[in-house]
Length: 79
Image 1 (cartoon, rainbow, N blue to C red):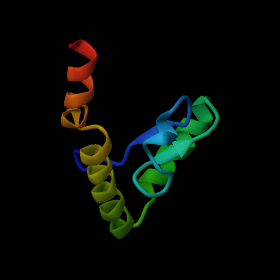
Image 2 (image 1 turned 180 degrees about the vertical axis):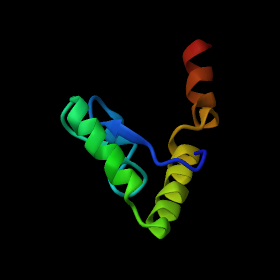
Image 3 (image 1 turned 90 degrees about the horizontal axis):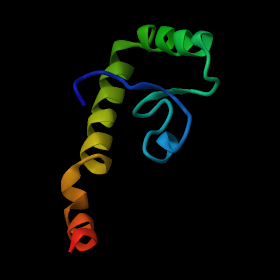
Image 4 (image 1 turned 90 degrees about the vertical axis):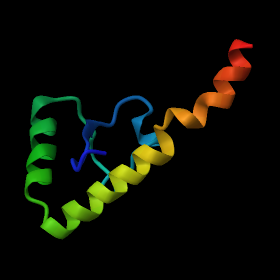
């Protein structure tokens, strides 16, 4: 959301929210090597791809991680 492509391990439920090579770079194995490879991949992306992916990451953040989407759910839960 800050002009940076998320580089994350694909553990847990993160793939329910992020899409590899669209709005993030997800790597499978939870190893230093896998993480480094994913960071290298991000660093070697074409500037146009970086711009597109950062825009998609921002959109994903606004659509899926905005607390305002949860106000009604939380209000019902706590009342």
